[in-house]
Image (cartoon, rainbow, N blue to C red; front, side, top):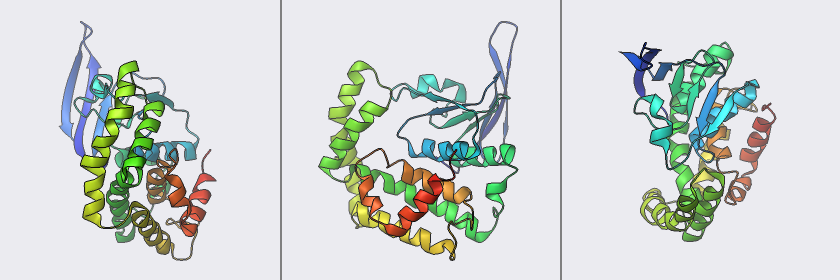
Length: 264
């Protein structure tokens, strides 16, 4: 997720092996200091927010260990986030823990890339589009994946194979999850928006690619942080058959394929 105004936690070990914390406020994200030697990224394989961070990590060619969280045990496996309990969670080699996808992307860009992807941060064009992507595109992922009964069944079965579940929870999610995702969540969103999931995504892609001002990317000749945020949301749909509906948007796919060329 994004836009969280969180805490910074300096965690140090005590003589009895416990952890002590000193907590202060910061502008965004959650940072913890742990004892680490290699950067890690805790993810869910099908989470759009995890895909956002993956993109920038792959773009920079970073050596990061990806840790897949059990979808039914996030509270336990992310206990070190002091109650955040959501993926993605990035821990750098110095042990600084950052939560919330957009703050993680900004942290990585600033620390490992001299902020090159965020040079326009603070301008109305950059800030408005990043906020729009993080709200509108995020909201569009559920309808495209779960917007019909058949799509919801297909998606939950696919998720059950990609995510880390226990033996029984995997089967329970595959067959019991789809009526909840479709009937309670997705159908309400589709009804509220008034457009089919395909039309919603095509409108978003048209609006986005029309903002390029004749360039290849929103960032100009090269992609910027906004491009990688949008790319992450769209890429999160790629493991599912509904992605073919997005492939029908010509300009959107031209941009998407060019984004793929910037991954290492």
